[in-house]
Structures are given as C-alpha cells and as structure tokens.
Amino acid sequence: MKPILLASLFVPAVCTGCSLGQGEGDVKSDALFARDCWYDAYDLQPDFFAAVPYSPSYRDDLDVQVPYRDTVNIRVQRGTDMQEVSDGMTVLVQDVKRVRKDLLGQPLAVTLPAGVLPPGATLPPPPPDGSAPPEPTPAIHMALYLQRSCHNQNAVLYAVDGTITFHSLFSGDPNEDEASDKFTNAEFSVEMGDPRDAPVGALASEIPDDRRSLVTGFFRFYFERGQPGQPFP
Image (cartoon, rainbow, N blue to C red; front, top):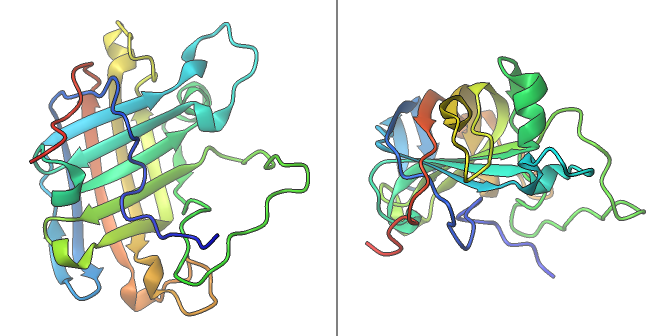
C-alpha cells in the first residue's frame, strides 16, 4: 500500500464534544514559505479555538493507560468555516494525563507523525513484537493548513523541529466541571515545512533550510462542550 501524504492531519471524522469557546492566540512567521503560493510574513490572526478529546484514560480507575488513546486535538483557526476552506493550525497531544501530571512548564519536542511521508517513500516496518517502544516524551504533532490562502495548492506545513510548552492543558474529559482543568495555555516555536520538499529518498523531516519556516505563537482558551462546528461553509 502506498503511503498518502495527509493534507488534513489530525482531523477526527466525528467532532463529538468539540469546544466552541472563544480564546486568544497568535500564530506568526516573519517569512513563511509555502511552495507555489506564499513567501512573505504571515499572521494567522486566529479567532476560533477548539479542542477535540479522545481520552478514555482521564478516568483514574483505569489500570492501563494507552498514550495514543489519551489524546486531545487542538484547533486554532481564523473563522469558523470547515478546515478545507480555512487557514489554521492543529496540535495533536498524546498522553495528556502524563503532560498534565509531570510536564507542565517544560518545553516538549514537536515531531512529525510516522505516517507523514514524502511521495514515493515507503512506510517504516512495524516493531517485531507489534508494539512500539515507549517514547521518552509524549508525542506532539503540529500542522499549519493554508486552505484559504493557498486553496489551489492544497498547502499544509508540518512541524519538523521545535518545542511547545504547556502551562495548562485541558484534562480531556468532555464532562469536566472544574474551570482550571478546562483551560489550555501554551506557547510554541517550531520549524515547519512541506514534506514534499524533502529530497528524493530522504526522510520527510529533511526539508532544506531554505524551505523551512519559523512559526511562533501561543494560544489560551477554555474547553466548552457544544455542538460540532458547522460541517459546511
């Protein structure tokens, strides 16, 4: 099976329990590069902040905690339209409970998901025993989608290096009633690029420096349970 470069990474099929609350944040670059579309300063000016939890392990009575099943997908976007016609950023945080318990206030590495590959690349083989070794830090992935600014080019830039620091993180419980556990506050500085710009045969993260963009910013908002966002323009 040939790998497919995901154009809308981190988008769950069903947005159950999305937060539709207001927030504040910045997503900026002094020189953003998106092939055949953009090479200039960029300011997302987001006004829509959402969190999609998939975290059965927020329950303390569960004996086994599975990091990839303890996940919050954060969406920071300009406007409330569907992603396919909007500019925005997604942040996928795995092992939410561990981040909240031990890693608040610490810079955490942002990496590419294993399944994001340049065209023609082959998927890495699975571990012999079928289970991946534990990560030293929780997996966090970020993507900047430019589906409004670069709609015809289908431009999505992925974070290949950099860090994000959470000062507070939503618990992942869609029924959370503690205000402090609904709050997410983070700042980041990451290098982003299009894996299609990596040399043939190279890893997706080996994007040339002149095709990478430094993107910085922050976001703060409270999770607010509500109906899913409008599924059409």
